[in-house]
Image 1: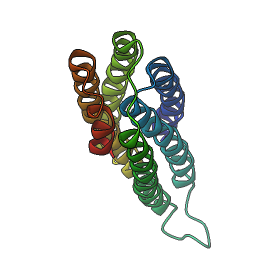
Image 2: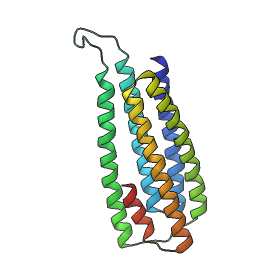
Image 3: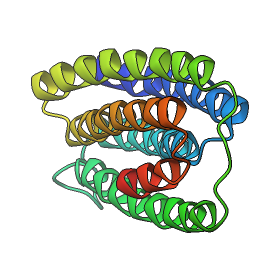
Length: 183
């Protein structure tokens, strides 16, 4: 169980690193699609924290109030992850709507995409680690976190393509539309 706790704790650090990279990409470019990717990373950090606490709690032995153990804490962590994803989607949709009404050019798109690409590779590698560990250790919290990261990697690839298209075509409306797809 100590390995699962260490993985969950490492997930927090990796989540913060990826968030910093994605926020830097958004800040450099002003892209709403990259904003949506960064916002999703805030959810990743929050869910990594929830997974860490859930895994620590579930490691406790059974007691008089919990004769079968504390394993349900991991399922609650997975539910919290779903709720946070929905909240992030609503915030992304709001931002995309206003960007659609007032589209703006993307600044330094290729540098922003390079930074976001590094964050996506880190997320992809960490996703594989969590999938393997979650299956091996039968941890619902780690598996939920891994699956969430997998969707984040997929949407990041879509964001990359969308922002690259905006840079290549100057169709500014693609940026908020890509954010809607991410949401």
